[in-house]
Amino acid sequence: MEAEGREWLLGISLGEEMRAAVCLVDLSKHTFYLAEFAEGRFLANLETLLEGALPENKSKIDAVVFFPRSQEKQRKLESLLAILEIPHRTGNWSELHTVERDHIKAVLKKNLAHYMGKRIDCERALDIALAMAMRYKLVEDQTNHNVFEISILDLEHTLSLDSRALSA
Image (cartoon, rainbow, N blue to C red):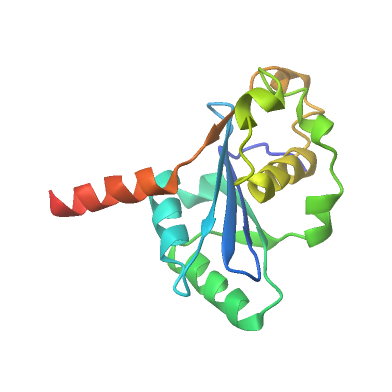
């Protein structure tokens, strides 16, 4: 599967322990945005992040969701995606564990250690980035080589911006 005609790729997983991991890929800016955070039962953090980060035109997004096993959590995530009008398909959890970290290095401007440093709080989000690179054949396209960056999204910063906008 290739990303032709899309401007954004989105990968989301919600673990059984209510930890959300998100990978947004802005193809026009050649950037993987990664976030991983604890989530509450209403998925408010995920909703805030997606509302603030995604373009209004959802037809430009190709989303893959790695659903939790819990039917209740799956329904909540489906409901949120419907409210936000994000079309999506279901990913297979095995995709998150079969890609070698070296697979992504061809598309990155700098080595993976430069972007991740000692951050272990975005491991699942990085796994999603690897799966997205594989699923959408980003590495196979030579024009993608050495052009992508990784940026870690700070959910606290996103939420503080949102609260400032509300109080304005």
